[in-house]
View 1: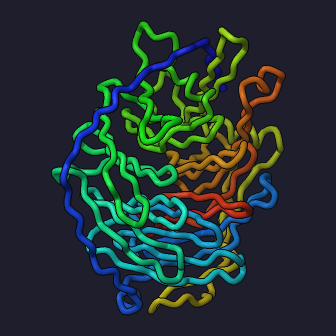
View 2: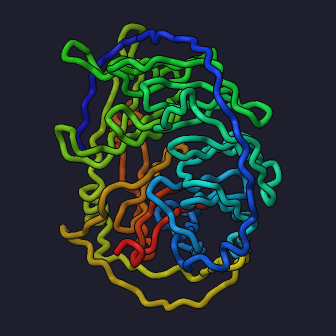
Length: 415
């Protein structure tokens, strides 16, 4: 694994621009959909629960087959004891408080396609390319659509994230819109003009506002001021970068999915920083090749094969109810050799010092992240484990205290 270290002390000031705009709001009817579920196609998407008690041996325990198609931008989000899953036009609520007694609570249908979703407290925010919806989930079994909002001039929505009671929405017009989402309605409080060189956004300590981390130029010491923002521990908005890389961040790390445009072929770019002295900062970027690290892990452990099989417990949702189903337990043996293909990274999440990753060929992996100062003492970022999911293409992963949750499309739906 290649490591690059460079000192950098950058403090870039972003220019905030207030723009006052009138914008429309309409509320769509939210309909419980047991009748729709009854006539929907079976097994259009798979919700899988993975037990994480031992990070070295994650176990695929439960699959729930949902009767609606999931798109690549659909997501699963965990809040307390409930999983909120979006499919093409639906939000599904699943009680995951008990592994063996998971229950499908309800589903609501939107007028158009929906995709990404985020949660802040009892506010669930989900968007389409043209609008975003605020849903009250204070009673998970009875989610209520509170409002539907648009960007000024109906500008298209590229991405969004939430921090506390502030929603950050990136418009297709090179503006970042900051809304207050208190009381179930979105109120525009600030518009930030995006720099042509923007790369990442970090929330300002005094909100609302963001620090724009700029792409480096030939004269930059390193990565346009990334190190100072890493050391501030304020984290980063999980918006796709200006290079269209998926971004995940914790207080210590920023991880990006590589578009393989870097000098070294890799799957993930992992950044962190630490202060050496009052005047010296060290920043590291790790070019992480999933396939290579996986093979090195198995070489070290002596494992020669993986087994792909369906989980022992499976449910299917129909007519708004979930029933346990029987399924074949045929197993597929995957030889571990240099032909092992994991496919591109589809999603990843950071929890503590662990990074959870899904790959397109139906693999779930765990990677341990080690801060740069510890690596200098001999430790390293390392591959912990890999678990084959049933034949599917994972799209989204969420991580709770004891389990990981994956939304995927069945393999046969991709043909």
